[in-house]
Image 1 (cartoon, rainbow, N blue to C red):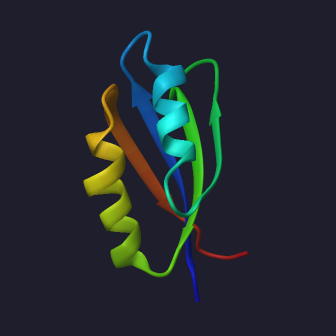
Image 2 (image 1 turned 90 degrees about the vertical axis):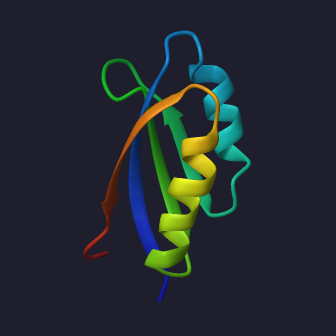
Length: 78
């Protein structure tokens, strides 16, 4: 069963559009939206398991220039 999560992302000022474009290219990202207020971007992702989720967050999202902080919320029930 797939692991689904919401990832809330804080971005450096002026980098939101670039970060959003990079996020939309990542495998598993189903939705990515910039929003007013904090956090700057909301992402909905679906991956194979929690290990794959950790890999995406740590090795891909955290490496995008402009990302300052993430807050991941794994979906408990659908």
